[in-house]
Image (tube, rainbow, N blue to C red; front, side):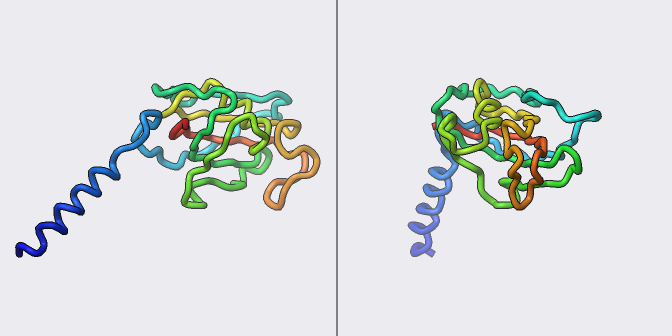
Length: 150
């Protein structure tokens, strides 16, 4: 029985150490949201809707952020992807051309622990080129949960 004591103690220490996090994180993992498309024609400008206001640090241009996200097509409601499907949050530097312009603009001012809905017109998304899962000139609806800022 005594041979197990150091192993159990080490496991307990590792579990406690793994429960920590950066001061910028809310600590609670969000659940995958159900995204709904508003009624009517797609907007021509970026729409940023605060679904749940965060209480942590605020995103500034150039910050590295970690998010959970889901995106759907405005016209069909078909999912185009999500971090939940990929089983990993997305980390990127804002305003560095790493994501579509609608995301860069829509993340600024968001607080850690918050959830935002971004309705992104084609001019701030994939324009007339589209992707394999997004048709050309498609307005996109994303729900983004801000987990951390580095």
